[in-house]
Length: 432
Image (cartoon, rainbow, N blue to C red):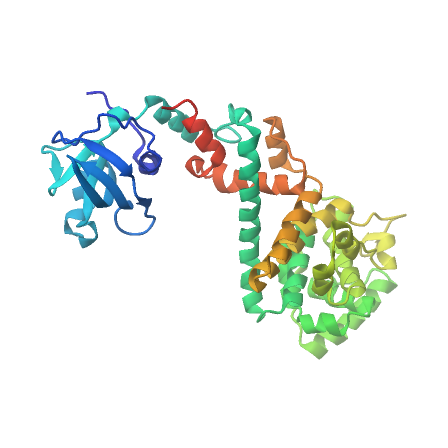
């Protein structure tokens, strides 16, 4: 008897996929006792406790059976898993195994169907090659052969999946703030401003400052800078110029008045970073943004197009930061965070927040707007997208790049090829 060895850590998922989509030769199926088996319906895949498939309909030996189906790589797994003692398995009508490794033809009187000789060996080999691949993505060698129609539908699903994940994170903040959308917007934009390397510490900065103080001093750009730079711990130490002295003096007063506890400045990262992306420039940008926009989230909801959103985020920091990237170190002229930085905030924060608002209010117009705006924004540029480009998988918009980032992180890196429309297409191509 020839047995194809399949890694048991991954084989059960593949075996369930093969049964669910009938990727095996169905003619001439017989139980180990020789009774013919015809599959009307393989059942519904059960991802919870109990048998693998429920509500299956099978003809076994001329009799129509309706009930549950359990799958194992080996017949002996039934006993190894203790199913003989579990009442959840009393309605199993068929035990489907890859390999029969025991004497006898039934499992506790339940007929056994062995499938290893009915499954195309090419399918198993392809799966093993994908699982063992160390390439950028498991299917790197053949991914470009997948038809564009498959990619289009799959990217649409991936984009929504990524928006849902980001919305779930924002939802947790929403609960913490008792549904204060403006405060969540402030924290989320602060985190986005600090990305990619300072996102977490920028979020902590925003959360260290009561949002009511931001609102109270929103019309005073100087005081907004005082509060943000002070809470960032960047005003500690010796004054470097008159402007720094004024900031320090004002923060000392506000810190005592509002009982504030600043972060430690060493938490912010500066190395291998363009000056326009320095934490100091991002904090100055955040202060200018909230000085310019009263009720920023409400204005986001009112925006009718991407241009409108861009204009909300197009700000120049205070005059000091026109000639400084860091305190006390003047330069002839600075460059503020540009269009790419604004687009990153839109992609990673504003549009997911807009999507969440629609989801929470049951108003799909905002969700559709978020998706539409994502497709209007230019493609992102990063290491992952460069990797996809090298495989001739290109992007026409931020919607595409967000989908490809989701595919790489949630499917390719985790070797979830059976959950991927592209992976499934490559596995099944030319089979049966």
